[in-house]
Image 1 (cartoon, one colour):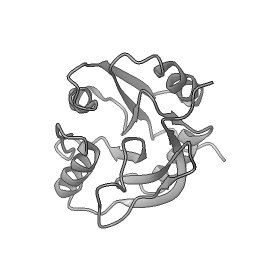
Image 2: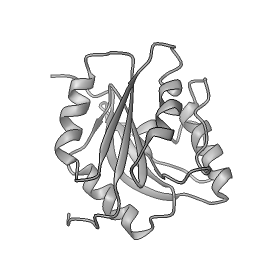
Image 3: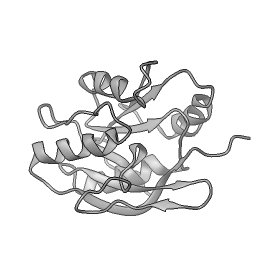
Length: 172
């Protein structure tokens, strides 16, 4: 993979309840950061699947694009380079990527958007004020965030079928 244009920067939001698995999440993520990228970690114990800290983090994001990952998930090697390359091609669009479970199941995004076919680490959205939805308090908050974001943008996402993250990977 080649280096992407430096104008795309990422704000990566990690909601955590304090699980130790965040060390694996960060170990996979931090070597992939480029200048201008940032990680926002918000700890919260509301029990709403991380949706409150995600909503609280969004206004603080300074990057051109926002990514999300849970504290028990992990980006694959070179995932940020790949995402940056794809986003650079069409920077004003929402991008949805694929994710995999450690048992081999792959979740690919679908359009029209459907519950069960969008997950937290699949999402990359332009950081456009007034065009970002809200994470609801329910388990399907990722779907609700994407639905409201796309409604505000009056747009369809770019779908990618390349896996960028492992969900709940086995720990060493």
